[in-house]
Amino acid sequence: MGRPPASAVATATPERILDAARSEFAANGFAQAKLADIAAAAGITRPSLLYHFESKEALYAATVQRCFERLAVALQRSIVAPGDFVDRVRATLRSYLEFLSSEPEVARIVLRELVAGTGPGAEILLHQVAPLVDLVERFVRAQGRGAVRPGLPVRAAVMQIATDGLVRAAAGPLRKPLWGEGDHARTLAELLLLQQEAR
Image 1: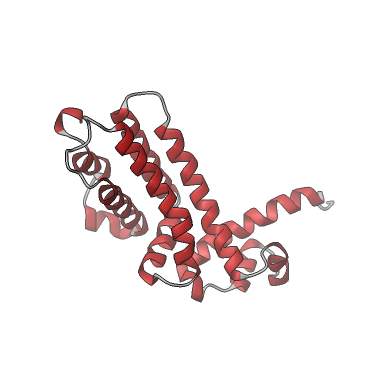
Image 2: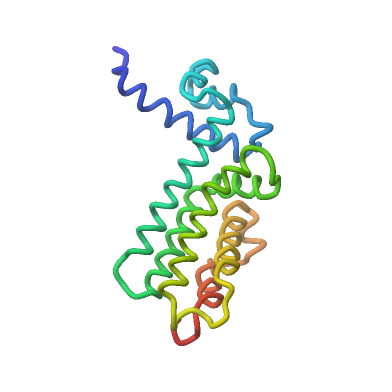
């Protein structure tokens, strides 16, 4: 059997590395993650990994950026979707929670960095997470008049909803014993954000 074309390998290898890195960073954090383990999980050698990503910091930044680019696309699509404000709030909540449900490793990475508060992750969160919070806050403030609860501290409410989603997604098998049956995140988010008439 012949070798795959170089273009196919070049395209596939960075994606495999990023997938392996996401799992390793989620499980062990930035400091404890090992490039050799990431390379092995991606099916390559450590020098090959360093050919694609020059350092652990560069790989970590690329891993987190890739995750949040996907989330940003999902949120932006929901915010500009057809429908009234409440419909788009619901779509945005659904997009966010579905993203975390499908990528719980991202939630673990973010929570590790929030707790650590230092290292390369803190800078990455400022540049990746803060703009997403800004995006949702602007959307709610600009278009939620008459639907959002009066006097609501919008940014704090957005962060409350976001962190609840992160913790729930990162909890894995502890989710059901801690949060109970069913998924009440959307209901609680609507109760926090919206006036009763708008719900």
